[in-house]
Image (tube, rainbow, N blue to C red):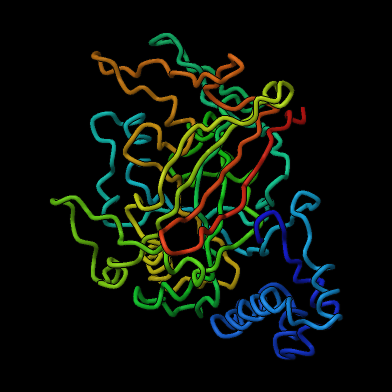
Length: 408
Ligand code: CA
C-alpha cells in the first residue's frame, strides 16, 4: 500500500516482470503462499527491493514499464481485499498485563493476576479456518450462555442458547511467521526475531456471555472461533526496524523471565512503538454521516511479553511453526482507562465498596446512542501507525468488520 493506492504484485507476475528481472523470484511468486515465505529473509528482501525499484524508477522507465505501472497501481477504495496470507495455524496470546489484570479483576477481585502470568506467556490455540480479511461481515454467533443466577438454594436453571448478547472486539497485533522451524527444534530467543516476516492488525471477536460459561477448565472455544479479522497488509519487520523500542520494563519485584526467555537484545529492542486505535460507527452514525468515533487509543509499547518471547515459548517444547502462521498478541490495553482495547474493559467500572461489581458504564456516542457491547450494524475499525522524527510514517491500513444479524 502506498497512500491511497495499492501496487498489485499479481499484475507484475502475470506480465512476466519478474521473469525478466529475477527468474527465481518469479518461480516463487508463481507457487503457493508459503514458498516465498519459507525462503525468508533472502528472497522476501529481494522482492521488497524489486518493488521499491519498480516504483522508484518511473522517471527513467521504458514505455513498457510505465504502462505496467499504470496497470498495477490501483486505487485502494475500488478494491476488495483478501487475506494477506493463508495461515495454517493461529495462536492467540495474552501479553498485555494491563488487559490480564483488568479482566482478571472481574472474575477474581482479590487475586486478578494468576501466579503463572509473569513466568509464562499465556496463550491458546485459535482456529485458522475462520480468519477473514478486513471488510468481511461478522455474523453474530449463537451459543450457550451463563445461566441466570437463581435464588439461593433453588435448583440451577439451564443455560440459554441463542444469539450472543455480549459481542465484543479485541484490538490485537498479529505476527506472521516467515520460515518457521522443524518439529522438535525450538526457536531460541536469539533467533526468534528473525522468525517473523511482519506485523498486521487482528480483531479477535469475542462472545463474552459464551466465553464466561464455557472457558473453564480448558480456555476459549466457541466464544472466539466464529471469526477473526485480519488487516489486508503485513508490514515487514524490515520496514518497522526504525520503530523498534525496548521491551516493557518489568516493575521492580517482578521475577526476571527464565533463561530461555531472556535475551539482552530482545530487552533492548524487542518491542514496537505502534499507536493503535479503535473506532466505532453504528448504522445510525452511517445514516447521519457523523463519521466514526474513536473509542480508545493504546500503544504496543505496553506489552508485558515481546513477540520473540511468545514465539520462543511456543516452540520451546518442539512445536513447529509453519510459514504464514499467525501469532496474535492478545488484547492491547494500556494502564489508562482510555487505552483499553475491548468493550469488556472499556465499560468496566470495577467493584463497589461492598466488593460487588458496579454496573457497567455504557459508552455514549455522538448520536446519543449508547453501547455496552456491540449491536447489529456496528462497524469496528482498527487503525495503527508508527511515527518517528526523521523517518517516514508507516501505516498498517485498517482492520474493519460490521456486525451482521444472527442467522436464526
Ligand atoms: Ca484475544
